Image (tube, rainbow, N blue to C red; front, side, top):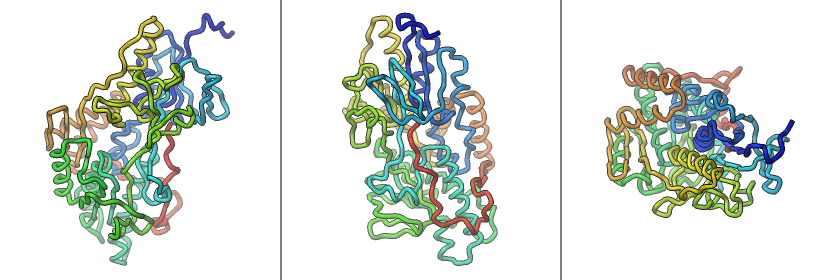
Length: 439
């Protein structure tokens, strides 16, 4: 029997089980709300370590946890596995695979997807890194490149196979380039007989005049030098003008390559279109100071989907600490509103920025404190293990990293997803999985 509205608890629907949505759901544990978490995947993914799955450092299960398991002890929370296709703000219902899920308060935390800046055709040749499927696909492409080079008799084609191009010099691009260099120079160096994996050429392309533009210029320079010590060729102030299955054009310069990775930009999920809300150029929904959508005090947009101004007036970056703080803030605001109180507008507390550049090297920025090198790398490791969900994942990742550090080996060098096909039959222009949609 459905209770009358006067007796029913407020229904809070959260679209997205990422950092933002999950933080909001956990903060509402035991509170007088009926919470529904909707996601197109049944797991929460620790995206900052996806590049390690793509470069055979970790397995997918090491950085993902089932959402139902995470929320199993929250009696006021239910989880719905569904792909959201729209929001009916008039009837206050979410459209998801033929179902209509009602809400009183809606929290949209649907994340971001790859952005190719009007060149969507490049997606077939330069896949990005947002999901587990993306990571395992890239791992397959990278490892297959070495396997095919081992069997290749044409020296020109062999070198094309051993050329890896990473487009984008943000944290993901820097970490990917460094990890591929370490894979080629250390983990694989004794595995082949016809090729020397250390002959691999890794090129990192960045349109700006320095890497890691949100960081202090001194740390950008330190990152560049660390990558170059690993053998990565860093090209700054260089824009990609075209790419296909044969390689990449940087202006009029052509780099032959069979393996291209995209880390140059993201755009928000379609939430802005669902809500018919104002968005910025990246598709992020412009929100009020309390993270509500203008004209909709019952709808919050948080995480990578929201355009939230920081103290300097620029949008806050799409990183985990921002998403987690926004999720917790919205939960606190809902609890306060139910008690007839309001709280101050959202204010982000900057916990610093980190990026790793291979073994024993990272850059860290905490306000005025700037570090690079081994100690920064230790801080990077500790921070990422801390933010992982679940003791099991923390333990396994810590043990994996310790093993990799001591032995120079990577234990997840498995090529999957080529069932029934020989290496020689894999298409050179093998396309990526479907473009990642926010979920």
